[in-house]
Length: 429
Image (cartoon, rainbow, N blue to C red):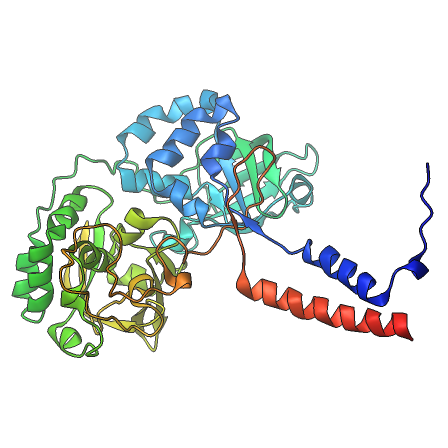
């Protein structure tokens, strides 16, 4: 039964209100999606999914969008099991990063690839550990069979894979393709394994020998985190950015670093460490400037990250409230690199945008996990809320974590207000 409806019965105010509700409901939201959760629906990809979860690559992917993942089914991956078991964790992670294309390809996009091919950057290229453009892949299409082949851009590279099928796609965010072989980057060390003898570097002694890092050495020794750093030498390696004694002396009087609770002080120290070995050349040519730290691993993806770039010929490190530069190489021997930096790296998650810290109230033993009442934390800089939300759209049945974007909301509000004013004037005209 049709219900008669006349716009003439709607007052201008009612019409404007209805329009406001309609436009407001269209505000965009972002949803965080775990790629391993996407893969969990496909049992024939369980081994590949396990490899992603066992390395830091799964965390890397949670901060990415507009990507294409090349997944190897169990039946094809089994032939490479000796290789994946022999490699060290850091080498295995780099091998998997080579299967993450930093470009979204729909199935129709693949069918439009010219026979000459297209060069696509992978997540491995962003680490700075791939020479030349060998962290990229060349994707070609056979014009007769329409088969898609992925291989290294290096001439005569023996490693290549053929796309078998489309596994899943979330438009413009992620596509998962099944390929028939594990891809090995050109020049990749297939013999790199965990059998490498440990370096057993005494980090505190190395800093004292550097003659300009006594304050940092004292803080590391007192906090106990130096043992954790040294334990990481046997894994993917570590890169430490150590402030000079002058950097500590130049801290503003409002920054009471020594007064922080013990656990927050440990977080600040971990904020100065990358969980991978980066020699100076790799830092200077780093493609992905946003780097997670050891503090990121404790507090969640997207938090406590450093922005690393090259400025005026030097490596610059930006925390969001402090910019430091690398002043010297204290120690560099795989898997440990230690660099002196000109400023204490203050995380905005703790110190806020103005880097002001109030001394904790007396009686706080500093052993709780919550920040001290004396630490000024603005809502947008609270731990766990500061990281960029992922833009992967979630399929039905997936648990979505919706986060509002203040800037987007304000823009939408201005547009809505303008539309309302125009339509209101039209109705009254």
